[in-house]
Length: 286
Figure (spheres, rainbow, N blue to C red):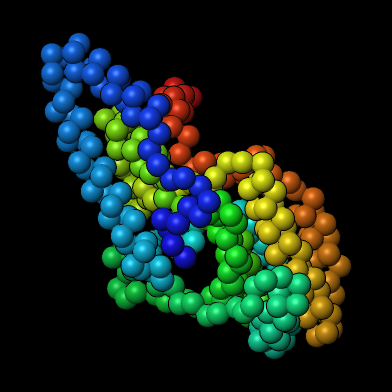
């Protein structure tokens, strides 16, 4: 996965974006008699350094995270399904094999590969590793990646099977410019959760390209993967004598929920720095 690969999209900083930022900062520089250049320079340098660190960290360490956002490298989770069932023995190998076989038969996902993701929370006495299974679909023509993450866990004789469909975009140069250029307005709103590892800057500049055709492609891929995993779960559980009526009801409910909304409920992760300011101000007043 290449975070910088926008495929058929011309990934550039728009002239309108540059012109708007120049006019805003020129106006503020004039009315503050040049004082505005101090916070502009300081906040821009801080934001650029933190953003570069987040991007480099994601590219070099896709298999680790710090406390939160374990799947940040792959994008944003758009579908998260958990099914709980009772069985006296572990049947995860059978479940995984059935899901993989169904995916191979019905989708271009050729395999589910194990991936170990490590929580490197500095407050832990020792790092914790957990193993997941990962399947990757072919990217859309507009640089959107689709990743399936599967895992199983147990609590006594209760079994939990989970899967997540994750939609990832490319790092948008226009979004990067906006984040840095308007950092004097926005940094104070995101720096605290950033330092607590509750958010990162990569998600603010990673863009799922907004277009009718890309929305169609994403919707088709996400729904097809979920449909296939649901069907595989039914086959595997019934083969092991487990009632699947609640799973089938869960499928009907979840598959009837639209994942459209123009951008698969993700949208362009960066809606513009000024929109973020407005949202933060409204939240403060609420």
